[in-house]
Length: 156
Image 1 (cartoon, rainbow, N blue to C red):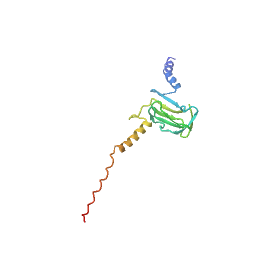
Image 2 (tube, rainbow, N blue to C red):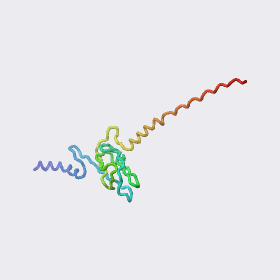
Image 3 (cartoon, rainbow, N blue to C red):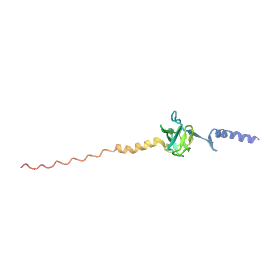
Image 4 (cartoon, one colour):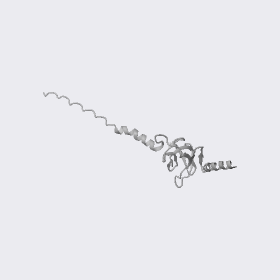
């Protein structure tokens, strides 16, 4: 009976964590947060998924765009509230989702990949700046030298 008591005492934190929405492994607890469709205006109750720039398995930084929703009045970038790995997206392109409905899940204990990680807007902006920088730094092409003056004919 004493052994059973010790086992249950050690298992209790894992059971509490599981009830709180944390996934339990033998080594550590990994919180997976669920993000809901945000409010998009006073009279707006639903939106359509028009873009999913961060796929499942992608590491995102805080404020990276995960899903883009559109209504007849507004387009909303749903951004990551914390850094982590997207573990599930509860909608596909052109799906209609309601305000408050679960939209995606993110594992906030996931380690960032080497090189800082994150997909989203910052990386796209860096790429576009890098692509435009060589063009801006290149010197303007040299103007063609004017043709030499024509030889004057001797006076008559």
